[in-house]
Length: 270
Image 1 (cartoon, helix red, strand yellow):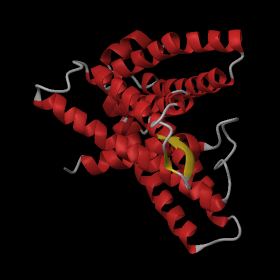
Image 2: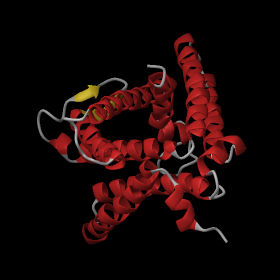
Image 3: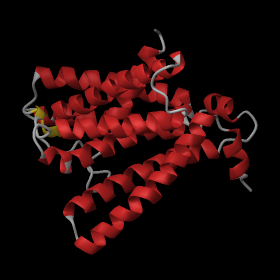
């Protein structure tokens, strides 16, 4: 029988905080939103609740791959045995399939083909890096999940006020607003502070380095989301696929985390 508590206790502190943070998110945020939806039948609450539930399921399935590793040498075994790659490899390969499909939609053009090739490279590199990070990829997935949810929350609430209604990418992704971006950075930053503990932005060199790391990876998350929107816009489709009902395909859900994987690989060289 799997000793879940024993496996959890051997996980790095960052991963433990990420798993606990997801549980807190589901209970503290999911329950009130669900009640709001059932009481008011609010479309906004329904969308936010669905987004929250989708990301929670994705995160918990990802965490399951960590818990299924043997207790002894859990992180190393995950790399050598490739078990954690069993989560990211199908995502990357299916994302490649969706990308090729978008590239082949007629009429074809050179720009869309080149952007598709960039995406294919990002899916393979980012997926490999996330699989190589094993349990530590949970930290990035948790932060990106909050970042993504924040964009929806901000887009449905703060973006109704000026100047937060400013559309950042008017042609490529008109639904992306300044309000959504602000809430994304705040919620993502809260997740980053949570997993790194301390909650101190200034005063300690490590804390400052962590903050700079977050800003850098957040930039890659925004880049991934924009590039996915650009590719879909060029192909004249709303969703990259329909594997996740109501929320598009793999490319729609994992665009940010894939590029965060690419970013973490680049940042590791500096």
